[in-house]
Length: 306
Ligand code: SF4
Ligand code: SF4
Image (cartoon, rainbow, N blue to C red):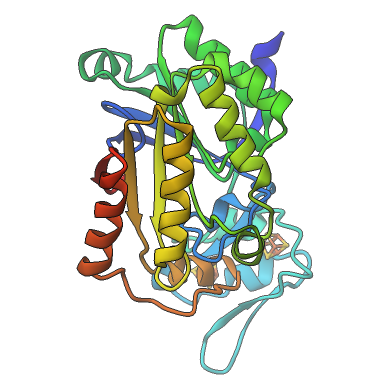
């Protein structure tokens, strides 16, 4: 009974307009093998639930301090909350008792059946806008069993499917998933392997090979390339021209989306995670223009944003 297969997700966003064609429902799945310095969805990195603290909602009632069975929460003399994340086992008791939802658990398990009930709510919108469901994350290919069954369930309901991926997955997983996906949103990060390892934690060989595979089987037209413009990291002339040459040599792609960096340090703080970006600045207009021109020169339509 595949519909009972469970996955772990951290959000379901309805009425999404930047995650593929038309109006979509985006399912954000937890777990990712990459560690990109600029990751805009840090809650998608860990495959497990996490505790998030929203300071602006806290009324300093100290209920959390008293209910935590592991004594993992304290407040200092300035009423600043500290969560000992080594001690915390993410049981969720504090979030349950917090009167203002200043503490919340990010990440929940869901069956394919439950997920499809959510996704189906907007089926009329998908039909009228050419939209559908997008699986994002995190890295959706990191939960292949759940993803395959969720994609199959979507196809059974004639819902258009998109996969937002880093491309980092075993080829046999991609082969299983590919026939069930209508549109791939495929990220290009660092062209140089050493730099890719430095800024994402993994080699780019698999990512390039998987992109080549999609081209080889005639799916290039279904791939929306996405290029995160990260100041001082991906925006160098060498990196952009490396990707432009590679993409051009593969051929068949029609479009690339430029995704400008924005500061998400607050999200990291709320999750107690380290934010490694050395800058908080958005890419300049000049940089965006230079990169757009380079990709236009190889015949791609360039779209700014999702
Ligand atoms: S999630 Fe559980 S262990 Fe962690 S701080 Fe809250 S109550 Fe304590
Ligand atoms: S229970 Fe919630 S509102 Fe009260 S101190 Fe803890 S985080 Fe703040």
